Length: 160
Image (cartoon, rainbow, N blue to C red):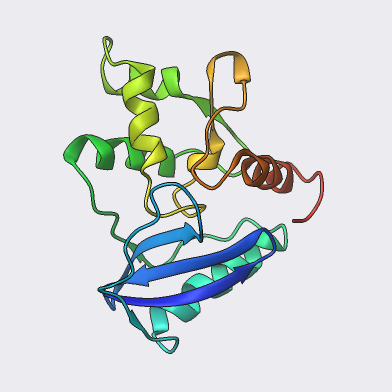
């Protein structure tokens, strides 16, 4: 696994890849930050250049399309939740309960929340677009202040 750093307007980030796909994007210091012991720093991978360009465009208020591979690692349930997250359009939001009901009529919003919180590919798999019941701002592994900035950016309120 390879890594590179990205200096976003809302904090330093770590990007990880197996050389072909993005496997992780995290804010330094966030909840569930991975161990970096097995990562090899490599700033020259093509995939890293693509992700950094995507992030640059995103933070400049554009809605870039992902034209590279994402490979989040997790349980079957978590991957299912992350797939639903990937379908939430730029500038839109969903609630944990809405995601739960897409999976199963008796799925709990709390179970979905756990999977959302462990999303290993921040921003590109847009877990920041998930809200609590009644549109309340709840948890974000990168911090609620960042979640607010990302949602504001997507709604054209201001750049990060």
